[in-house]
Image (cartoon, rainbow, N blue to C red; front, side, top):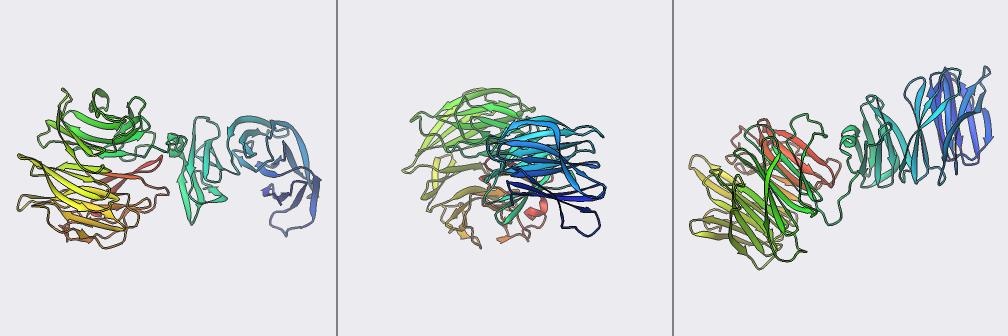
Length: 558
C-alpha cells in the first residue's frame, strides 16, 4: 500500500487507499458500525492521494507516475461512495512518480493542495462554490527533494512543511518570499505534524528527540535558506550598556549584522549591516563608547574598526592592516576600552604574533601600534580585559599551552605558562570590595575537565579542577559582576549551571538545556533584569534572558 487517507463530511465517513495500480474506496455512516464492504475499486495509477473536505463536499487529489488529477467523492443516498473526475486541470506533469500529497481546508469553499515528486513541490488553491465545478489556482512550484508534506497555519497564514531526509523545508503558501530550512541530525522519515490550533508550531522527530519549532520567526528571517561555506565558522559578540539592551554582533560571510534586540522584539528586527569588502569575517568584538559604539572585525589580513552612533548608524571606520601571508586570516581578537573611556585596546591573534593597537575611542585618529607579543607557537584564541584596579590582562590559547600576560609601567610581563590542550578559555575577575583587590581568573577546558586558576601575584597558584565531567566543551564564559562572578560551561547541546567563584560550588538550577541545534559560540552581557545570553548556531542565534537568581545574586556566594 502506497497511500491511505480518511475523512468525514455531512455525517458520512470515507477511507481511500492506493497501491499504484488500484484505488479503493470505503464509506460508512458516522457513529455507526464500520461497513468493510468496498464501495468502489478503480484501476488507476495512483501513488499518492490527499482528501480535501470543503463544507459538505469531498475532493481527492491523486498523483501517479506523471499525472495529477482532482476527483470529487460523491456519497449517494444508499451510502455508495463514487469518484467523479473534475473538470479542473492541475496543469503539471510530474518529473518523477509522486512521493507525497497533502490537503488543507481553509474555509467551506476553499482549501490548499500539494504534491511532491522528489524534484519539486507543486501547490494549488482549490475553490469550490456550491453546485459548481471546483477550480484549481496554481500557487507555486518549489524545487525540493521533499518526500513528505504537511500543511498547517499561523493565524490566517497557511504554511507548508516538506521533509527532505536531512532537513525540513518551510514555505508560506501565499508568499513566495517567506521560506526557511531546518537542518536535522537524525530524522525519522516523514515524522512531522503541525499543531492544529493555528499557532504555527511544527513537531519534528529528530533522533531520540521531538523538536517543536515556532515556524513564523523562521520564515521572517529566512532561517537556514543561506548556508555558510565550509571554511566559515560562526562568530558573535554581545556587549552590555548601562542603559537599554546589549549590542549583538553576528557575522555572515563578509558582513556583520548589528542590533540591540529588546525583550519581546521580533526575530525580524532590522539590523545595521557592516561590510568587510568580500572577505569572510573570522572574529568580531565591540565596546561601548561615550557617544555610541565601536565594532572591530577581522577578515583576511586586516581588522576594520567602525564607529556607530546611538542609532547604530556607522559614522566612520578605519582599517588596520596585519601584513604577512594573505592566506592566513586572524583567528581571534579582543576590543576593550580603558577605564577612563578615552582609548580602545585592540589585540589580534595573528599566527605566532599578538598584534596590539591603542586607538582613540572616537576613532578620530589612527592610533598607535604597540609592541607585538611573539611566541614560538601559533595562537588559537585570546581573551583580554581591564580589571577594576586598572590593570590590563591578556590570555592566549597556543594549542598545547596557555599563557597569561599583564601590562603595567614596566611593559608587558608574562605571568602564567601552563602545559595544556585547551578546548576553550576565558579571562575573568574576582573583586574583593573589602580589600579593594582584583584577582584575575583564567578558566579553560582540557580533556573533559574544567579548570580555574588564580593568576594574581607571581602566577604560581595551582589551578582548581571543577567537579564534573565535560567531554565536549566549546566555550567558557565568565558572567555576573566582578564582586560575584560565575562561570558558565558551554557545549553544543547545553549550558551548565553557574559555578560560583566565591562559594566554589555549582548553584542550584538546571542551566540552559538543548536548544535543538548545535551551539558553536556563546556570549553574555548583563542588563537590568539579569543576564542576556546569545547562543549562536550554524545559521541561528537565540537570545535568552537569565534572571539574577540564576547567578546567585544577593546570596553573597552562600
